[in-house]
Image 1: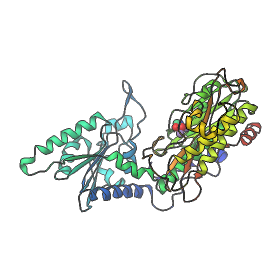
Image 2 (image 1 turned 60 degrees about the horizontal axis):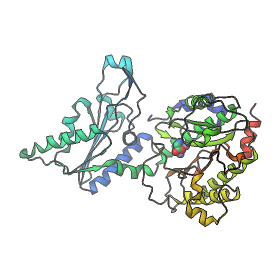
Image 3 (image 1 turned 180 degrees about the vertical axis):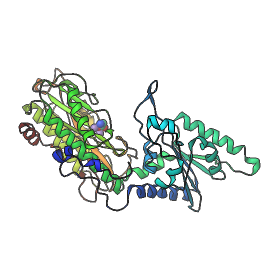
Image 4 (image 1 turned 90 degrees about the horizontal axis):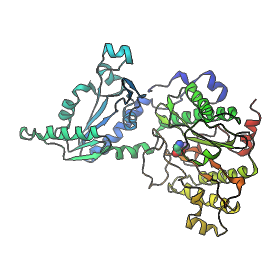
Length: 463
Ligand code: GLY
Ligand code: MN
Ligand code: MN
């Protein structure tokens, strides 16, 4: 996870996406990036008078009996350390002068467990491999935290998310206060470090952008494969299987979220998970799916006709959504509010709904003001994207280079007496991942066609 991996170059990708190459990270290596992130956080904390940062990687979660879900570290922990194992903690002592001590606490080596579950890094190697000042055995975590926190003014930890961490903070504070007569000052503040790290994670650094570009390309290739595969009669889960095959064949470790494959009436259910419905002729298929690569999410939606040709009603609605996405993309510019792309999309969608007579005749401004469009467009136009698919970060902010967000307008037209039946069960969403730059936003996910003619051409020429 910390080094560029040759598996990114393989036959599957060479065929589907020849332009995608293994990570080409200009400048610092990933390990350097983790150190830089820790230093940036330390600098801010020292300005607040210092403190002890303590973050948990998390634990394996039991699926049943002795079987666990695949482990995935907490994103903040991954961001700061790149350390891949469960039951690990990162501790950073920062004083007011900006001096730091970085400690990783991890599982000890264990010959018996390693035969079953795989090699552990172990405290003997962890410090050097992950750029820490020292590494300790996690079974002695409490002792080390109490020693490192003595006489610091604050703990910086995740608050209110995990019962275990809240409880440990209480225990550590209790132990430190008990040393008061020995002259030890216990921290008198606990700061939610998640909010501080969220500000950092909002602006992606060069290695993050490089990984996200690659994840986006892999997901685009998977959508192409799904479009090429789809025909009336296929079941939703068969299309999901094509996506999963493409993600894993490319080297992505997992999905970034449960794949949405929604056919016909299901296209109007925003988060419909791929089921067993057989897709019918003349229906739309909405796929919202993306892989996770080295911790980073991608998030793409495409909507296309199962038989390769949009009906006139589908095409009319599709072109409105695409125009809304174009308008939102044009509004994704440095200095704009996060809400600017949404406002731009709503304007185009509402005009489209008026033109298609899906909402009663009225002025555009009146229809926007009254929220008449919300019957057909009930979600926002995007979200931050990064280590989490719905990434951390303040939404009350202006767009800045290095931010990555999705642009995903849609229209969802269910059967109703006052709606022309030609539009029934027309659920359309178009979603791309955008990097904010000094110029136009860069869409990372355009390796999969988006214009109606281009989709039809791909499906016509697939054999
Ligand atoms: N895949 C969830 C979303 O688009 O936000
Ligand atoms: Mn999304
Ligand atoms: Mn999505």
